[in-house]
Image 1 (cartoon, rainbow, N blue to C red):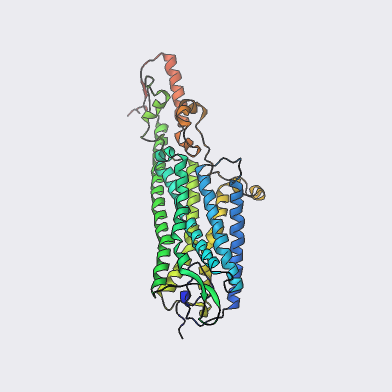
Image 2 (cartoon, rainbow, N blue to C red):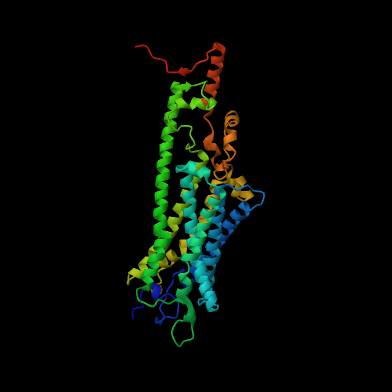
Length: 425
């Protein structure tokens, strides 16, 4: 007798979307495979809980000043901790007891929280990427954003996750595995045969396919902007090396006038700092880890509902089972990515072992003292994450002061233009 696809013959809850069929007569399981599942889930739980708690305790200190990036990392670590506690932990206990132990209300709550943590983690990563896109590609808008806008961007993933996870409450319930046996489990009940296909396809699109498409689009734009910025900076260095510069002593803008001779936007607010590029790199690594961990999970989910010949529990396919379990591994990777890019998030023993690394999250690069005296009245309202984009080029400022001193000595009171010397033929 054909036992049907994996979602129809899966009394062991391999994932938050497991949807076994009540007509399946199979009541046993492969105990050796179950031990492997328990070992994998236990390892993931320890790593994800320990790593994310370390990040939360470090960033949650009352005396610590938080930038926008700190807030996003804090909430992403919170969603990853939710994956560990509300998805991996119930899954682990479920594998140990084999059958769900608890009332119907607990069954629905567990299934709801399992998917909520997945939605929240995915959409928080998307919100953090969108924030990096605004910081790099729309710096003026990013500077003008009040703190309320940042909090709204952080609250949106939580709200969307809470709403989009509601179908779990109505699909899953505590019911008999086979009518008349008295064996109960927390299973899904689809009223139509095509129900599992529609539901699994929708969750795959909402949690994986569409977010990955948006993440790809954001990073394509960020990459284009950074390449364009590096090209402009290279041109600016070539111009400075040749001595092209225009100074205007009578300009009302004062010391800002030396920038007039440079290529457009060289020292404008759109200049991308190294610290900002570091935060982009960190977010990009997190995105890669997310795709690498969740792609096998959703591929297996789609395979199980669209292919009748897909492996089921009777086949004891270890690769199939592990693919369903390793999706939450991204919640283990993220804290180590944070700590790899920022030593302040590491435990003290790791700081001494790893030495110093760049500090991308604080972004406390300010203008030079001389330029800050000119720009300070206009910069006091800007966020710490973007102050470094407003500083003048130090070499340009020194050239300006040197030229100004020569003008005072010669008593010149008019505009002076410094051009490259013409070479004799």
